[in-house]
Length: 180
Image (cartoon, rainbow, N blue to C red; front, top):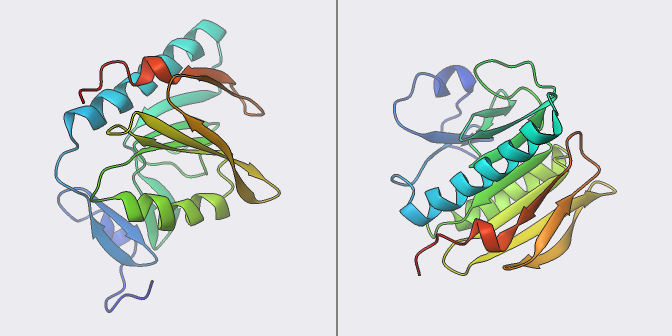
């Protein structure tokens, strides 16, 4: 992506509203996420938070909509992350171990193509795309610096392993409150 004007984190942090910055190119976030979008993101946060508390895993935090500063000209705002051992206070300073993006029509291409490549390059161990309208999640796991699709999940459970604080998600529970 080549921008006519080039922006950095210093510009980004002065803007009003919700934005992402990819290779110096500003991208406005869609209007407020839909109710289904928020239901899915909230269910993921609640589920993982409960498991972290139960396991006494203090190295990791589950966080919704936080800035992830990849570099000076790329700042992403994932829907939900599992971040471990990150000392940043205002934003993430290192790659999360797991990123969840809840897909909407207005951001699908960005999440499925551009952010996919960035998360893969930054070695995010798991990238999960959630489609509330289809009640489906696609899970990708990093293997040899490349994302390999683990599968599509709707009613199944998936164990996120090989990370600092392993956890299981039951996608039937995640999608339970979504309105069709």
